[in-house]
Length: 127
Picture 1 (tube, rainbow, N blue to C red):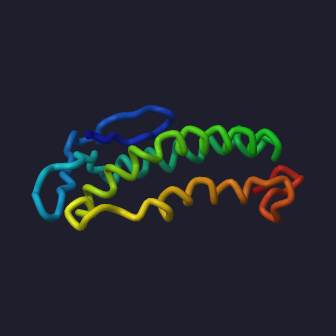
Picture 2 (picture 1 turned 30 degrees about the horizontal axis):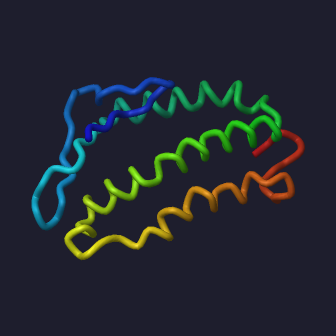
């Protein structure tokens, strides 16, 4: 699996095109190849986030909640893929499997902070 950087709503390689391998600790098999972000990539990501915040801060809490729950839905649908890759990266398959509950609970647990009664859901649109 090859991963890229997500900057300014676009998936791309690092600016210097370098990557690094994440290997299964027992077999040495390359599990993922990750884009190796540079300082320039980080600066560009920070600038893109700052620019995006200009419109995001105007989005009301109900719409923010709706959008973030859509993201959670997509992530939840990919939970088996996340578990498989993470298990290989840490060698859990060589140790007889991986306990799936904690990983599988991370995404649904994040839904708690988007609940309308959550203290982090501010009615003034500030988060």
